[in-house]
Length: 252
Image (cartoon, rainbow, N blue to C red; front, side, top):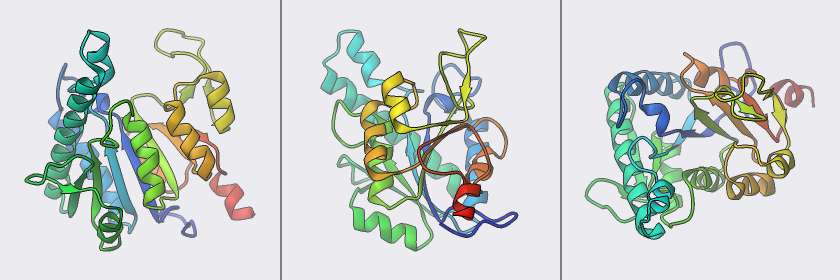
């Protein structure tokens, strides 16, 4: 981790997981151009500070495999459609970042050579070292695994120092804050807290991967302006799962 000073990033390399639903903005389906532009501008600003960035984007704004399965589709087919939805979001994000002057490479876990490079760990690391943002598309490439699990897996593969999960909620709550006005937000949780309490941070496979590797996870609201930059600087944003705060690391 880089030394944290006023205005400087607290992390050298991050994995940022973006919720597909958060790309909706005010539109009922697909991608809000306004949301995408703001998101790309904030990522470009962080990237301009020298932070190496890997990205995983969900596909829930277009198609969710588990939802298709619940409606009677074969789960494998439904998940494959969900993977394609993440590829669409990845290409849209690549375009938005390109317009903000950022070099981007999309690496796909499924073969789709005309529009994305295949995921190869060494290639991803090489792109990061060369200062390119890398977007990991198509989840893990396998059915029955969520993009949360893909995010945890890719974070470990690229040796990211932290996994940021950017959503439409400002952290982790003990119950759904939209349905329960008395819902309590946690500032900090252990991995075991999440698993034992069944908290909706990420799925159990993703949290288990993070727990085994000691990878800290930060959940925050990406719709609040500059929250991505604040999180990368190590400021107190959202909920921290595992790991230590910046103050604890600096005093250790």
